[in-house]
Image 1: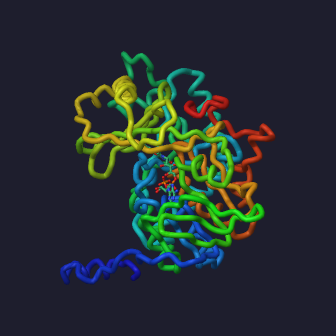
Image 2: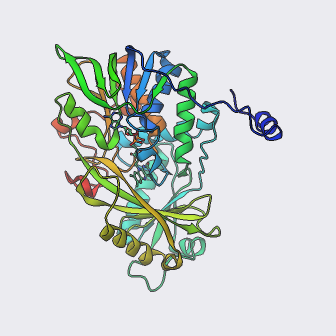
Length: 416
Ligand SMILES: Cc1cc2nc3c(=O)[nH]c(=O)nc-3n(C[C@H](O)[C@H](O)[C@H](O)COP(=O)(O)OP(=O)(O)OC[C@H]3O[C@@H](n4cnc5c(N)ncnc54)[C@H](O)[C@@H]3O)c2cc1C
């Protein structure tokens, strides 16, 4: 069923009775050309692009829970491409361009809102670094505008400008950045992949990988063995565990990141704002809640919930930046498991096991990557070659030392 204004009207007038389920509920086949492990944003997008761009439709996405129950349904939905290192910049730029046409591509409203993302600078040095980042973005065909101290004050009067411990010296505005509706992205890719014949199989946990003579031949699941020509791994925080089934040790640690939302307020925050002196970022959802987050909880864990000290730490950062936030009541908080790499950048690559491909290490930045990652991973799985936009996101950078360390923090996954 193709969605259109006419469909909405017709269903509205007839009691919404003729909507069809958005995807099928198929029984797993005994063999697929491609099996994707993990039904989050990256897995679904990969399946979609395999079918759409490469004509590979005998594909299954195996999800141990429900589609979108992982990080893709738990993130703070920020979409941007203001990276500075070439390997990252090209990839995120590619991804943002795919976002900009995603609603037409999927025939699904993913509610992309390019409301702009403002990164604050709190010293002359920080503003200079922002100017450099913005210049690099503009030179690469992306966008970036530097706001002066006065402009910041005029545009964001609700920030603590005068008596702040960290006064605002300026900011970099990335106008094409913003937010999207996370669930809608999942449902849109799931529907579009299903329409092209991909089997989306929920409640199907991969518990083992079958490798014969160094070659991946299938997966052992909670619903039986499924043979596969190729297997792709897109399991985010569980990457270390699933790769271990293939005997691989990835340069990844899994850590919890929390997010928070307040009660609904009248519109106050027209953009996304990132604090420059602490890890704190905030936006306002379409329902009015202030959505914010900050640092990782700081220890390795597979628990999808967070700790109270980090909640306090993040609330403190919010208060330092924007004291009015103290009046809002916090409604909910939750956590997701992030696959943090040693340089903070992702991995889209073949693995040493033939026909086993890995897509992981998205840290806390993988939501914005969903379309780009799906496109590049599908390209790699279909052709055997890295997509030009992702040809620096390879595993061997951890051998050669050509790391993509955007924040310059070294091999400290919790600091990226
Ligand atoms: C609190 C929080 C805030 C974030 N904010 C942002 C943000 O603002 N912007 C941004 O760009 N990124 C953000 N991120 C990061 C982003 O959400 C992730 O990088 C991205 O969603 C990961 O990719 P995914 O969607 O495929 O992962 P997931 O949705 O986690 O998908 C992986 C799936 O694999 C399944 N799985 C795991 N093991 C198995 C198995 N053995 N068998 C079968 N299935 C399995 C899981 O159940 C899960 O559904 C945030 C993350 C968190 C936790």
